[in-house]
Image 1 (cartoon, rainbow, N blue to C red):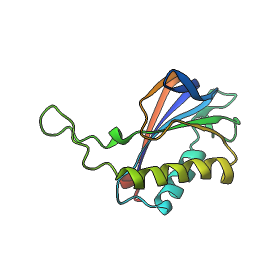
Image 2 (image 1 turned 90 degrees about the horizontal axis):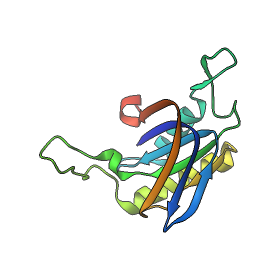
Image 3 (image 1 turned 180 degrees about the vertical axis):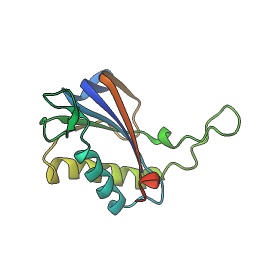
Amino acid sequence: MKFLIQVVKKASVDVDNKTIGKIDRGFLIFVGVCDSDTTEIADKMIKKCVNLRIFEDENGKTNLSIGDITGSMLVISQFTLYADCRKGNRPSFIKAGDPEHANRLYEYILSELKHTYNINTQSGSFGADMQVSLINDGPFTVMLDSAELGF
């Protein structure tokens, strides 16, 4: 599982020229799922994300978590995080999870963020053609990869 996390001043997602998700200060998170991912891996990724101290405190140090600033999250499904560009010029996506499996985990992640962590969480539409707008803060971008984290 991969989370590409961007600290944003605001972000939104549109489908068919209609805004379906919008946040102010917080995280824009692109989520990639592979077939070996489980809810246990998702739980570890969510916990790591929620506890990341990457917002500035009063001294300008990155020392605050999303909860400390009462931030929001916009979570977008992004199978292209599993693009393999090693051969040729056309990416391969065979490492991306089966859409049904990926959608189940995506919905699980959204539910956990909202109900277990009480974070204002907005979302895109799984599998839709989405237009994502954001204003980076920093910019500050972090990649969490469950394989690299040993999950």
